[in-house]
Length: 355
Image (cartoon, rainbow, N blue to C red; front, side, top):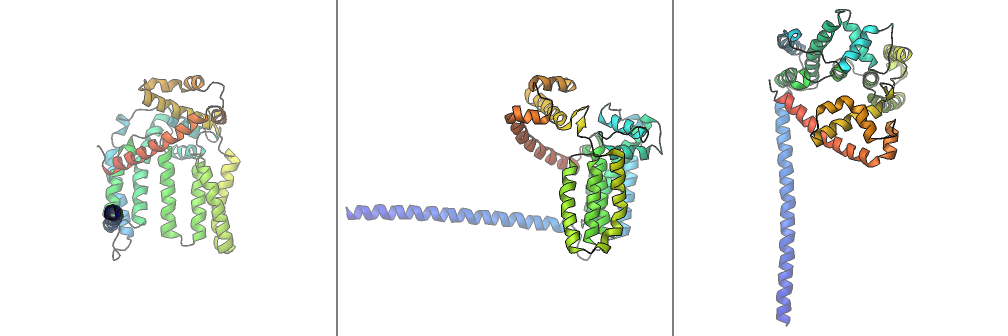
């Protein structure tokens, strides 16, 4: 009996020991895998970034811009005979831009309207102005991305290659409306200015605040980012930087800020006379319904009627949250998956363009 118990105890101990060894082996396996991944990242980084002995060069910066400009002009040379006019958001931005400043709208990307107004000094005819904006933004997006990559340490070859891929990608050419391309380009240019010409952290923070505030008048969702970063900026420069370091630098940006507020007030939270969040949520809900139910995409044209049918008695997004919280939560979770796929798809489209 004692011998039997000893054998059982020894066997149990052996099994436990073996399991512990397996777990330790698995842990070391994970550590080795993570070390391999980290080593690969460092190896890739060494190829992506400039070597220590390779200094930043304004000559290379200019050469890259020239190459992208030549390639871009070649790309867009026949656009007027190829591109169709899409009668959607973009046309409304154009109309409001041309109407400035006789008629002022604050519910449809005011700063993007100003961009169209600026371009209208070179082309007054609406169709030609639409096409001019299309072509300028294609070049602007790729060149500003190149400026950002090279300025922030990527090698000349990598910066030029990735920017060229962006230039000819669907993300740059086909995606519309073009408002996000302009805002992203403007933000990248501000970051480049910060890196090359501004040494003071206080001034850098002020310029980023300005970029976010300006962007918020095109994309209202950026207003939250502006508010958060402006609080951080205000606290930081007040505590750590003397007022004489940044006060005069901030005056022009403060003047533009006041101008936008006086002309447009705050960006309106409306869409076609309705709560903007309601419109955004219902449009996305309709698109996801079409995708998941394999319905005809023509259903999107009647998204308002479709939303009224699915969310009766709701006039605002708050109403939907109160009456259909499960739908909202499910939509948020679905959007996370979709955004991850969209981001990965966008990266793949840029690095491996189809055309």
